Structures are given as structure tokens and as C-alpha cells.
Amino acid sequence: MKCPYCGHLENKVVDSRLNKESTTTRRRRKCEGCERRFTTYERLELTMPMLIKKDGRREAWDRDKVVAGLRKACEKRSVSMVEIEEFVDNLERQLQDMGEREIPVKLVGARVMDGLRNLDDVAYVRFASVYRQFKDLNEFMEELKDLLGAEGDATTE
Image (cartoon, rainbow, N blue to C red; front, side, top):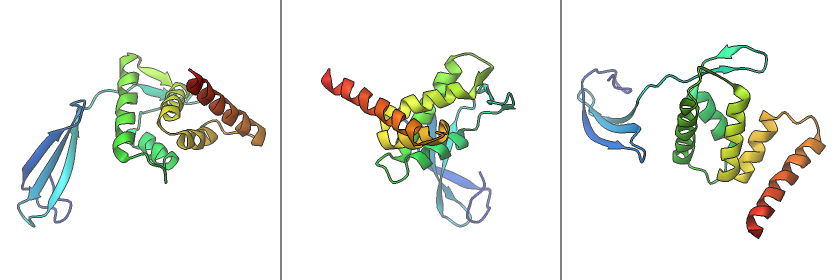
């Protein structure tokens, strides 16, 4: 592993830990050149299904793109990066469990919206406003009414 600070190739692992689901290994490393520490993450590389875009194009799954979208939706909210990473880990497992080689991007968006609805209401509305591309304020208000109605149903049970 190349040191991100000096480029030296020799380093040693100081500490290793698994995440809760034992799917990712976090390793603290110490460079033998400059002696600075850095962190690496190991994740089993599994084949993700190709995404079928709205216009019919095929696109490879890009975890970083999903994480970036979630970070933007959760900006200035009380959602941690750990929660976002766990959210995407769970989403990837769901998509892999489907056993399909290709899936519509619409299905991924729907799963993200369902998960965000449970994670943070404001992040959900932010994501929905971009994902659903509301044409006017009335469409946006309908989404808010649906969200508020769903919350009302949950609190009356």
C-alpha cells in the first residue's frame, strides 16, 4: 500500500477492525518511510448489476455517486457518514440479493427514497425534489402532504 503522504511502499498494519456486519475491514497503517499514519478500508468486491437509465443507456454501479447524493441530501442534518455508509452497504446487499444482471435506475431511486424516509425526513424531501424533478410547487406540496400523512399514520398506531 502506497503512503498517501510520501509515496513510500513499505508500511505496517497497526490496527484492524471489522464493521458491524463484518463486510468491511478498517486498517490503521504506519508508513515506514515518513512514519505517518493513515487508514485504509477493505471491502469484498462483488459484482453489482448494471443500471438501466431512463433513456435506455446502461451504466455501471457507482457506489461513490450514491454516497455523494446521500451526503448532499443529508447536508447539515444529524445523519453521520457511518449511517450513510451503512445505508449504501444495505442497498448494495439488497440489489445483489435480487440476482439480476441489470436493474432499472428507477428501482434504485425508489429504494433510496424509501430508506431516506426512515432515516431523515428533510433529507428525504431534498432527495425527492431532485430525483422526481418536480415541475412545480404543487407537485412538491403533494409529496410533503404524503410524507406528513405517512407520519400521522405512524403516530396514531
